[in-house]
Length: 299
Image (cartoon, rainbow, N blue to C red; front, side):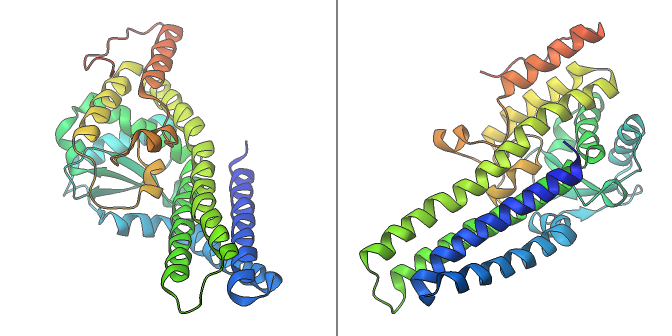
């Protein structure tokens, strides 16, 4: 689907979510369903505006990512430049995230103002071959303009989950005595709003991750380089999940950096690692390239 249409569709869906939440909350707190819907539609408009123009800055700020020069990080700049050239896109800005959890993500509105970020941990864990595979994956996201859709989804999904929690706390500890109907609405909002936002991310992210894997690996000409990196990153993030940030932004990363329960993994925005490796192996066979995953396939 055209990236512009995907962005419009996502924002329309988010408008609908906000309007639905406003309709429920307006009836509970204002006694006016229509007014509640209008207020939340206005809020949705403001949120979408902020997400469109500032989502990448919000994401970088939330992870304390720092833009670095080539003099500061020559190896990373060289690898990102090579990946950008392979994908035929402009050289993005480069940032480093101060955490030992190995991971990477890309963000921004379009290829001309993209930022690719790598954690300190990934720079230590991966060799040049594997790191180039990761950056080729991120450049594939940039080229296909996934970065805007995923940044907007992450920002607004986090906002929806936050609003649902605020509503719940207000209902429990506010001065107004809650009726049985209010509690039913509270449970519905508490469960469905964050879940709906998560499902939007899941629908966007899983298919885009598969495509970015294949496009990046094909451009590099070495599917096993990316496969090795993915397996290493999956294992390392399970052992040492990231401690800072909002799980709503997990779809931005190349592998899920947050610790989660079995239920959370069921709704993970990332596809199963075994399937990602299997598809990369199939690509290698189609390209007539050798495929040896030195890190081994995760259980």
